Amino acid sequence: MIRRHRRVLPASLVALAGLAIAGLTATSCVQLLLHRPPVLPFAAVARLGASLTWAHPLVMAAGAVLAGLGVVLLAAAALPGSPTVLPLQPGRDIDTGATRASLVHTLCGTAADVDGVDRARLRIGRKIRATVRTPLRDAADLAGQVEAALDRRLDDIALAHRPPVRVRVHTTKD
Amino acid sequence: MSRPNRPARLNRALLGALGLLLLAAGAAVLLASSGLLAPRFDPAAPLVAPGTGVQPWVPYASIVASVVLGLLCVRWLLARAFRAPRTRIWRLMADTPAQGVAYLAADTAADAIAADIQAYPGVARATASLTGHRSAPTLHLNVSTTTGSPIEPLRAQIADHALPRLRHALELDALPANLLLRLDTTSTPSRTR
Image 1 (spheres, one colour):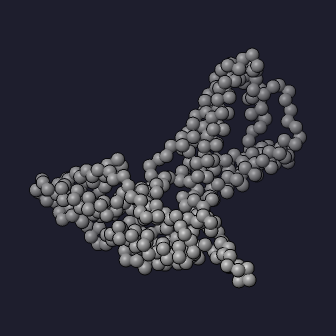
Image 2 (image 1 turned 180 degrees about the vertical axis):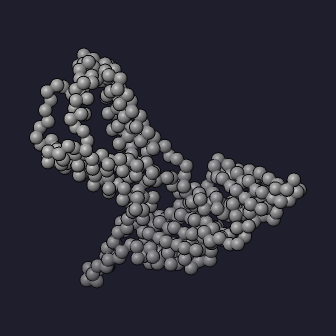
Image 3 (image 1 turned 90 degrees about the horizontal axis):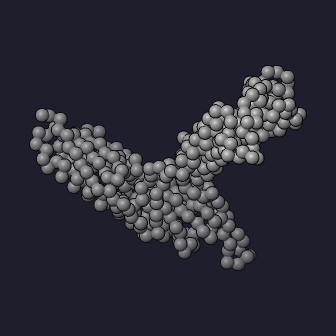
């Protein structure tokens, strides 16, 4: 089971823009019917439209902007984005996944629990990159210990596609 | 729609459709503007032909269209609030007509398996929903585990105990299920060193 972003942000922005356009148009039309000056300057827009030819650079620019917006929305719809749920190895009858945020959380905790580790940071991408800080002066085998701990945890979690683990150690005392 | 990751599909479909629409409109303007449609369409013509008047019904039609569009946009904005998969009420037929018909809200059955799983060691919270018709149901499980608890035994327990129990109770031969795990949702002091 893999899940990706719901694209809530672009969807909300477009919906809000649509709501604003609809509201302004409705308000202006009502004002027009009541013989009040409308919010949207229809008369000025009509005059502008009459004065511009199709070949005018402004019209061309407007067309380019429209097409560009279309490409942006298509990209928001089509590009998969990074997964929010990573698949685990399939079990009997059950399609299983774990949220990426919780995976980061648990692996980070695993690294931080290794003796001598002060603080741990971790990212999951094509590789699992852990960065640990230690007050130990001699931290030669710490990277190996952290890697072993992460490997044990990953064995249990059983990701369907297990990224290789890379550990970097920073010593805080020189 | 009984999908668990709502409203991902709605958002993708609407964004894609609007994107196509805008792209087509922009491309049409660019074509008209560049004179590629020259014999049929004169790029030297004004955008609005002089003397064009607005029909008296146009403002009314615009108001109706804007209100409909506005309501659709509100519905789209609210869609993000409805994230749980949609569930149904099942009709269970007895063996003989005289015994009558029973109705079961599929979610009630889901609550039972959620309670089962909640009692397992290492589980902090479990929710379940049962979607689809009785002939083709799908079970969606959301399970949060406690910090440091092993995953493999928990998955085995769900597959060997909770799921067969629910299948047996509902008299289903097969029940496709998906399980979403949130690992280590309780924090222990060791994590905050």
